[in-house]
Length: 258
Image (cartoon, rainbow, N blue to C red; front, side, top):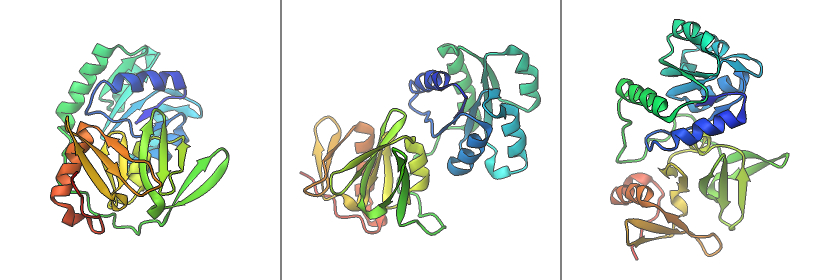
C-alpha cells in the first residue's frame, strides 16, 4: 500500500513496482486518515510510507496502528525526500528507508529484503472460503458525485485500468470507478467473485462458456448482451485450476471447452 500526499510520487513508485510481477499495490492514500481507513479495509503486507502527509506525518500512522494490532502492516518502508528522518524511521522499526526520487536498483534491493522476510505468497489451488461475515447483496460505488448500488449478481467482471477499475454488469453497461482493483477484491465475496489475475476479477457464476485459445489464453463468454472477456496466460492458468476443481465453486456453471 502506498501512502503519499503527492499523486506524481505515488504514480512514479507504482510504475516502478509494476516491473515486479509478485508485487501488487492494493491501495493508495494521501493522508493519515485515509491510510488508517484503507489499512483496515485491505490489510496490506507492506506500507510504503511518506513522512509529510496532508493531515500529519507518516509516524502518526504508525503510532495509531500500534493501538490497533489489526491495522499493523507486516513491514514499513519509508519513502521521503528528507534524509533527516532516517534515524526516527528506524527507531520505529522501519524495514527500510528510501530517498526520493527512488532509484529502481535501490527499490529492487528493498523488495529482495521483503521477499526474504515475508517469503513467497502462496498460490491456492482452490478459491478462498467465503468470508465469515454475511456477504452484502449490493456494491456501493461513487460515480460523478453519485452513489450507485449495484446488485452483486448483476456484476460480471471488474477490470483494472490504471488507477481506476471498470465494473461491467450483465446488461453490457460498464462503470469506470476511481478505486484500485485490490480494494474491490477485498470487498467482494469469494466465491462467486474470483480474482484470476492482477487485473481481472470475474463473477464465476456469470460465465456461460469458456473458449480455450492457442498460446495459453482463453475467452470468457457471459450472456447475449455482455461483452466477452479475453484472459491472458496468468488468468487462463488460474481458470484451468478452478475448472479442474469447479465442484468447490458452489453455484458456478459447468465450463465448456470450445
